[in-house]
Image (cartoon, rainbow, N blue to C red; front, top):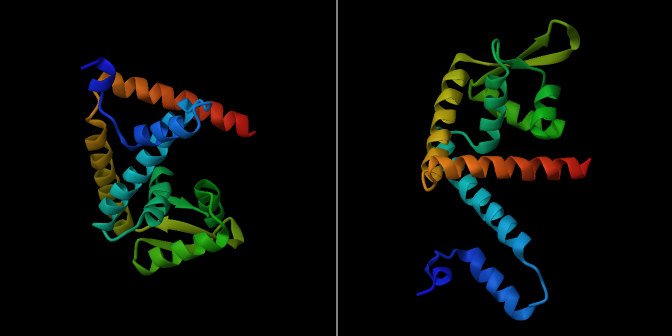
Length: 172
């Protein structure tokens, strides 16, 4: 058996093979990369959603809580800052904030520096929950990454960083 045949194949290999049969003129090397990134993102998104769901929140709620947590004490941001960070419309953000406030995970209060503005702050319950959720999410990610050794994981980080930076730079 050749080394080529000994390698493990995934569903993207089958897609590339189909394209090579119907369009042998195409260079599908980019599809081999981005098809895998897309499928990996979907699979990991599903796993993360399950981990967060076990704690009673979804990915969207986690994102809001985690953004507040990462901001550092006093874990307070304006709705506008949250919307900008999470790339959400103000309407989308309002819905998430309403749900999280009803659950007692954050509170909204007047902004002392802008009488027209609001501040969003994590409650103690929200802080406890987001810390549990980030731990659960990291456990899922670490488990998936265990398929690679430390050197491979480091190489992947570097390669993905370069690809992301070149893609984001090209968009500007």
